Length: 334
Image (cartoon, rainbow, N blue to C red; front, top):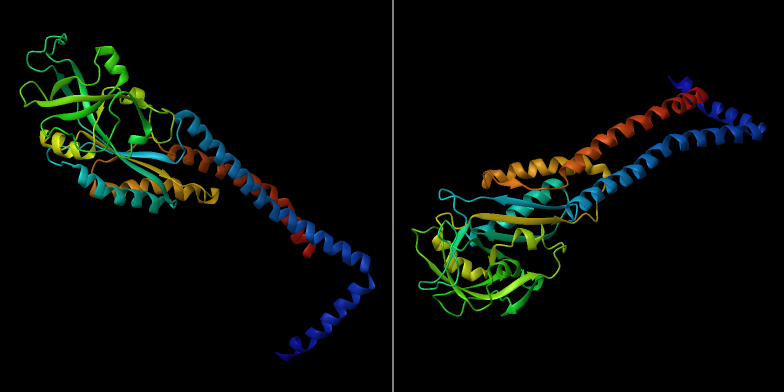
């Protein structure tokens, strides 16, 4: 047992003497080993660089299609009379939704907003007002009421009072802001008064057109989709007015609730792409435990899945080039 240990110093001395006796060959051998190791390790660095380029291309393609930040998504939910959802409840659950999605994906929440909209309702003339022709259904237009958090700085009022997230002055009349396109089509100006109702048999709510609005910039990341198109028939109202006037009219408290979430991708790492993709699915599974039937709108999920597939193919191809180099290195060392 002691003999191999006692001859080890002699072997080291002999090896050093032989290397010193042929310095040229020693340097060439050392250079060969360095080049072989460098060749093997460079593949990994090259693969990481290519992965990042491919991932950024996939996300840029998604952004060009949607016009939004690639990690901007929307969780939406349709309340019912059996599962109503009020503004207060939607605000409370917002943190849980953002936390579940962020925690499972592994990226922090950059921005998060809440949008609540009533189901379609009827816009009706006040009793005795014969200025407007009714549709075959007996109403002027189908409209909805929307509360969008922090919307005031993103809308421009072209006629009437500036939008304010404050209660209506008249406790019996709801102040609303009507989109200018619908107002132009119907010939309505700021200051006019109408009624709104869920249907012709339900109670009416008096409303006043406080102003006419349009988006300051429809392409702003604040909007999930073009507001001048998607919210054309939506009357913007304040949070307090939604709670006071609209919720009592609806058994479900609201027609649709959307949580707009934008994740901060400044720490994006292609090596975690599979985790990001799986995180969307896991996050929605958690969300559905406390918000059954909540749905995920357009997101980076498909782009991440495409990238993971391309990443696997690229990694396999690059590793195949390493096999000859590895064999050469092993043969040389042997």
